[in-house]
Figure 1: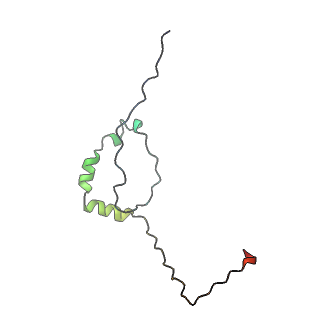
Figure 2 (figure 1 turned 30 degrees about the horizontal axis):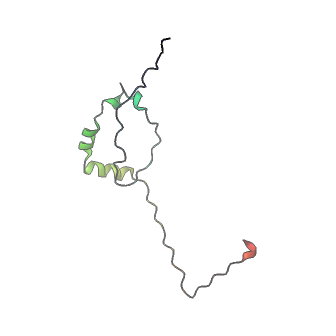
Figure 3 (figure 1 turned 60 degrees about the horizontal axis):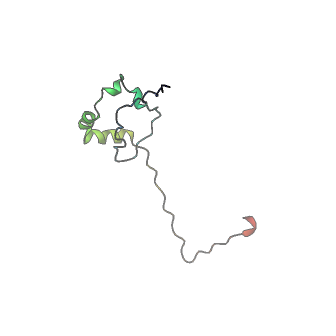
Length: 93
């Protein structure tokens, strides 16, 4: 009996380095293209290294400033002073 093997699974380009930002950025609603479907699209022709070299330094700073996530500031609660007394009503818990 002759066995039939399944064709090998298609492989795409190696995964790219992500999260190059130095601070949190706004989230974008987008759908990731599977690496096996990138072939013959504009994304297969873009050289990440040359893009990073162009944006290095001031380019990244401007990009991060434009798309920075809104920072939330935590308020510091003042500690209770020694003269404060707290009563807990257990009948309402």
